Length: 616
Image (cartoon, rainbow, N blue to C red; front, side, top):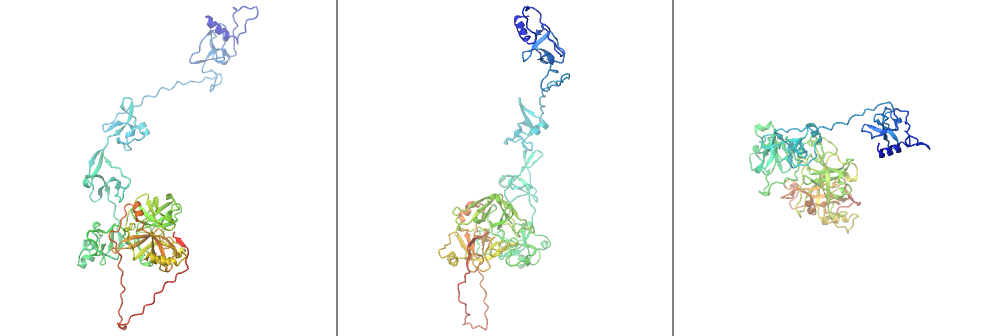
């Protein structure tokens, strides 16, 4: 035994073997250390290092018999024995006398099974494979872990893994079915596969048998075959300047041709009398009318010698009188379904509370009064169009509810001035016979006739809203006459109308009241269409004799309106409706020289005025 080993063994045995007494020789053999356990350490034991399967512990702590000729040094610097790990004490070890089975470490996982792609596939990075498992080198998405687990990876090149993805489909030109489909752009085909009147979320191009089918539109542009929506025929009543005629009588502009034969105008060929009118002979938005002698026809305008030949009829401001059961029992002020198709209503989202009226001017914008919506956030409101009877679903055509995206107000808005706002909708409106935009006026256009106001007003600020939409014909009032009438109220002689104000009304029991705010003052043209002259704003009282109401002039605020409205139409050839002169019957008893006495004109008595009210 070397000198260094003897010194280490002697230092280790110092705690277990007593040192030599006085007078004893150092060459004396040390006594054997025993333990109550199964091991003992000899004084002549050889100092060793325990292997991987054992641990150095005191001899009394080892339950397995061990060799007494080998010794080791524990972590506490005591002499011990190498004891197997099954019986070594420690955390998580079974009590003495029991063996713990030690499982061998798991083998390393096998390398992933590489798959071989087919002839119609290629191994690409997972982010280049779209949802339909076609290669799309333009996209960048996260790898699909589930697909890798099911199908396994493939090898792109040494050390890189990918997925098997189908090759991009080859384009293939197809022909659409003539009677069922039409070639359109994919953003004009809705989710159900029908042609849409406005742009929607683009539909995916169909892939059939590995080919991406496309069709040819005009000028060689590519599109997809989309189904033609079913025709919904709507029966209407013709306007005052229209007649219900048979097929082949209306020209391209919608006027009755110079036909003198009454049978050709009001009759109908025998093959159409018992059946429906052909689709190509239907009126705008698939409308039809009942001919006087039986059968179906379309409403066509009477010849108008003043209308310019090269000018097309306006596509806005049309009033469709849609036939509906019970129209004969309505009172004079109630409208016919579709008669005011530009009317819109604004509601609260949470409570469905009626907020204000509005006017459709395009397929995305609504015009209303600013004081109606100034206290709301856009997320609190929604707009309903096509409503006829409030909170009922009995109309022949459904209404549309659309959320509000933004509200634009006039930059020079005052307490009573420039009370106008433009509401932008979240999506486009779908125009139907009962949902139509009104025409906007031209710059510096003036209105002097009688105009129409509509809504569900509360008469004289009391009572409840009308269930059925009503309308009133009101005379427009010149600015000087309107100021004179308002001077007689509490506003006084110092009140002046602003440039953005327009007056109408002043007749007893006939006025726009609370609930009509935001609605349009629509003035009819001689061609049967309507133009928006004003927006209902405020009044002094309601329906009082000699006190007209005040509207925001659309003509004076047209620059602001045209800035935020896209797709609106201006009336191309507006003319006032000619006034019908009353017929005076000559009485034989009245001498020709005598004239009837006319009552002296007197100023109307103005009632006690109330505070000016902003309509709600």
